Every structure is written in structure tokens, then in C-alpha cells.
Length: 84
Image (cartoon, rainbow, N blue to C red; front, side):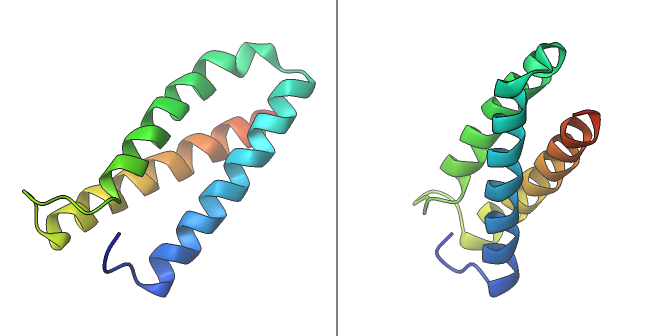
């Protein structure tokens, strides 16, 4: 995000760490969670595109959409992590 705050960057870093942990644990077992992780991966890619500057959207609109998506991803990754 062009105007990401330290809090946004910190959340992105935590999400990336959770994502890496989930992917490692999934690789080591827990195939029943694979479908949920695949859905989260789709949303992760969507988040990555939202945080890129978009000419047709203001930074505020992109920021709000990205924050909502970050919250959704955080909940989803936490669910999978807890199940592992």
C-alpha cells in the first residue's frame, strides 16, 4: 500500500508469518484442511493485488478494502492454525 502505516505493515508481516506456519504444518499432515487453505490462498492473492497502488481507486478506498481482507485472512489462518 502506498500509504501503509507501521500497524498495517506489522499486520502484513504477522499474516505472512501465520501463512508460512500454516503452509508448513499443512505439508506435514492435516490434509483435511487443505481446501480451506486453498480458499485462503485465493484471498491472499487478492490482498496482494489490493495493496498495490491502483490508479482508479484512492488510497483510502484501497486501504479500507485491504484492511477488511486482512481481518478475514487473519481469522481464517487462525482457524486453520488452531486446527493443526
